[in-house]
Image (tube, rainbow, N blue to C red; front, side):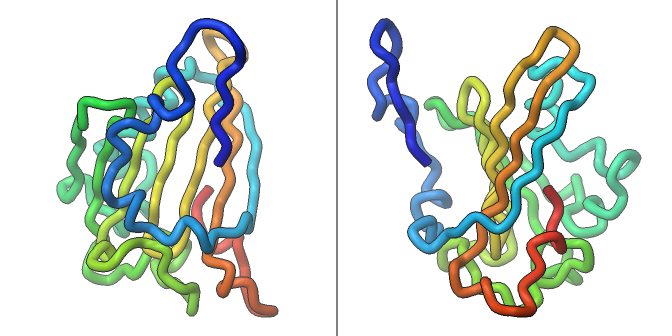
Length: 174
């Protein structure tokens, strides 16, 4: 990920990363490769998109398959006081990751040691959403089109060792 400061007012390039969550620092981000990219437009204000990302209480009604993998009752949010608003979701006992079948299918871990049963989320103000699963990293750029429409550019990164002939990046949620 590259952060650029355009000439003019605003924070220095390093300031947006102040308060980076420890789980992101522990992750093997050096080994990540882009596996899949999905771009779509949603009929919602960008603030609602961010709110939807940051809470999982709607899973039971809207995303029952995600609720089965990461129950809302096992989620929490935390304001770290910096640029990152973070959250966690614990995997259900039957799941190894957040994928269509709850399995990693041989994909190597990218999370840090001890983080294998947790999904970590962060909103980096104003429009970057990150979700670290045990075996992949989701990165969402949230781009407002209007007060009622938002473009979402989702990139899914996997450990470089996952890219074998049988590798299927579409087996995880985007």
